[in-house]
Image (cartoon, rainbow, N blue to C red):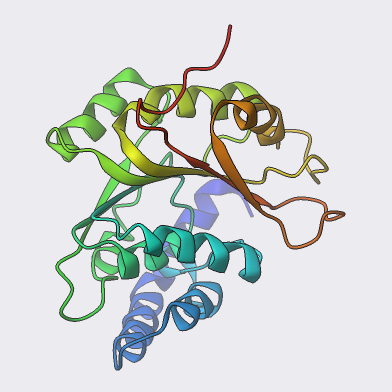
Length: 240
């Protein structure tokens, strides 16, 4: 389908998709959820068009990451790469105060849904920032949104090229507090797409700090999550 026709189709179906999405959200919020239930909802929330919620993750990997993030009792979470909002659903269950989720695509259509992801009674708010994470002006918008505070967890799952993911690490690591976590998606060496090059950065980072790898199967193609524990002196600079 051509891009213009796809946009028109999405616009025509949007009221129906929105109605279904908010019905699903009401079901999700109907009772307290365990972390495992939240991950299952992130995988299977469903929906269509702009109102679809989905995370392209291996359940065991994202569950292990979610447990690691929950263990540090995060106040603020920042993610680069919102996609269909599945991980934002998970982070909004865990974060005590704020989730800031960033994506190259315009998220204005999703905003009414995504900003309502935190469970009832939560003090967490969800902020959506649309734009190019590699743009210095976008980084400045993130800084303004943080109001001088540091994040507890940074999830980098945007540009998967070696140059792109390296730039995101270099640009946003300064926002993470000592003792916090930085995680990367698609770290396994064998990837289905040639542009998935996160492994090259991950290989350079592993000697610089304490790290963990959440990989369902060592022989798998694609996926895999790498986690860096940020040292007391802050996230390390990459060697030249």
